[in-house]
Amino acid sequence: MSVYVIAEYDIADAKGYEGYVAAVVPLLQKHGAEILVADREAAALEGRPPRVTIVLRFDSEQAARDWYSDPDYGPVKQIRMNSTKNGTIVLAKEFKMPSN
Image 1 (cartoon, one colour):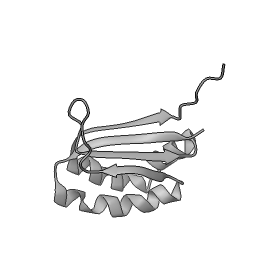
Image 2 (cartoon, one colour):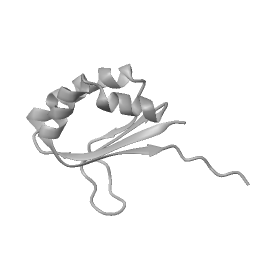
Image 3 (cartoon, helix red, strand yellow):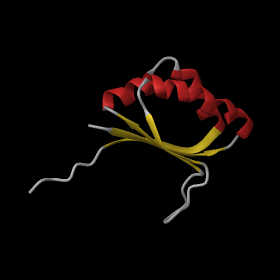
Image 4 (cartoon, one colour):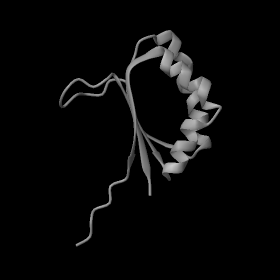
């Protein structure tokens, strides 16, 4: 069953954030992630979302967790954490409609 990693945050240090995308994409590919959404100007229908919204699809929860805990991602993750604020990252399972 697919799982989704949903990330939202504001970029606080644009110069510091510059290397994140180039560094994270190969790691996402390594773990089989599909980038479904990558928007720096998502429109709010309710509330005030952070400026950046990312949605990734992984084939399994284990694949998503393996990416997030990959030792090679540690320094890349630190780039994001040091250059962003108001961040939230969640792991959500694919919805399956109940059968009657």
